[in-house]
Length: 378
Ligand code: NAD
Ligand code: ZN
Image (cartoon, rainbow, N blue to C red; front, side, top):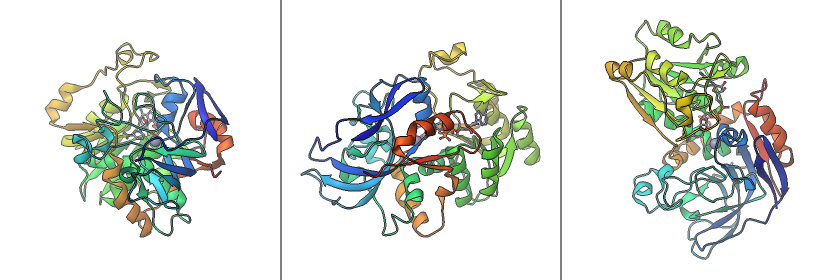
């Protein structure tokens, strides 16, 4: 099969790889039709993780079931399914509680497994013609009859829509809240959409890319340009000096300030911009070690946090991978009902063969390259 393979920093190629196949009776084999490039792929693409060369990337996957293992009961050949980026077993202590981003058995020794992801198990990614889906009955989200027509919406259920929603859950967003979101990448934009769905009274989105801020505005948010590093002050001003009720971190450890990576920039801005006793939800990825960081602390996965401020303000912080399965069913139903249209942030639709081009432009945050979806139909 054709697949996109990581061959080293900023080097990905589409080439022939052995076909994905059923390996266990509980597996499902999916023919991928749409698969996205994610901001998380960029950490790997840039060589800022311990991703092994020779592996297939891609964790935002949707396709048609081709074959099911002998132990699969629910999923049928021909079903159109969207796959959560995290792989859960369904029966461990965390999966039972809905915390499928922290499955204890799919990646032994670690909490959490995913397709084509550094440190999240041996599973191949779906930027390929075929994908092996472990624990198929548990992981496949079956799509409704309009699946083909709304494929570009439903594929966002694999990651960024539930992840943006998760940011608002971690932050504790409730109807009427004002919400400050750092990052107008796909995840931040989905957090903005989710905050509105949850009834936020005011959604403010911070970034320094004009094209991405324009998209945030299109989604009904107030765009805040942080080019001069004044975002926290701007948010305070817009909230009568009090601060936003809730804050979402949708950038992660490679966040920057005036063109340079400053790993604590977004977290300390959020502590400043969120009101006393407010909540901060962090879905942007932070890593346990980042040897290639310029910052001495960041090399060891540490952050100089304004903890005294946070404590004095009585704020809470919640973090982590999104438990996609906790939300994807109800978000699917919002799409089906025409009440959410996550595809509106897509900027480019490319055939799988052109994935390396997509990576290059998306990685440079080139003007207008917000979200790339790859069409992989075999
Ligand atoms: P992205 O890189 O396209 O978007 C990040 C945006 O943040 C960019 O537009 C960038 O300009 C902006 N930014 C950089 N520094 C900033 C700062 N100081 N203040 C405000 N904005 C700043 O990526 P994405 O796809 O939107 O993903 C965002 C993060 O979410 C990544 O770290 C990704 O790995 C992570 N992620 C986490 C999960 C999860 O389950 N927790 C899932 C998907 C993605
Ligand atoms: Zn992703």
